Length: 119
Image 1 (cartoon, rainbow, N blue to C red):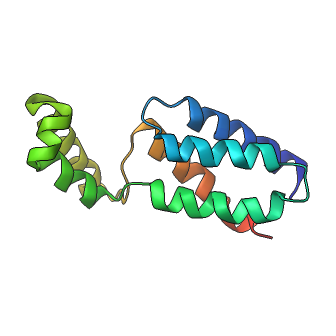
Image 2 (image 1 turned 120 degrees about the vertical axis):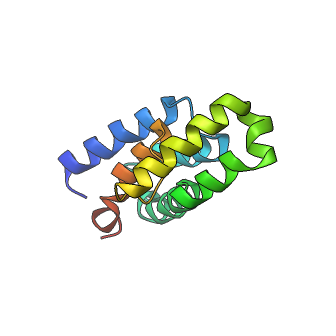
């Protein structure tokens, strides 16, 4: 992978790990990937990291369903869950396919470079 691109992905990965909405599994995968950069394991870890990112990014319909569910209300609280559902419906209407929380937004940025990572 080109050095500039690698540097960008490293920076995005660190930002992802710092995102308040990043879950522990994604943080662990990000750390494994960072640890593998520059080693013989990097190429294999690229694939594992991308697989984790693709599993971690939340489709907008899933977010809407969760925010409107009893579990979503329990997790976020009624007002926050309603606000999240309304926001998600707005961005879906504008063409978004995924949640736009800080972690999902960063995952989407990294996945835009997926093909370069897998070369």
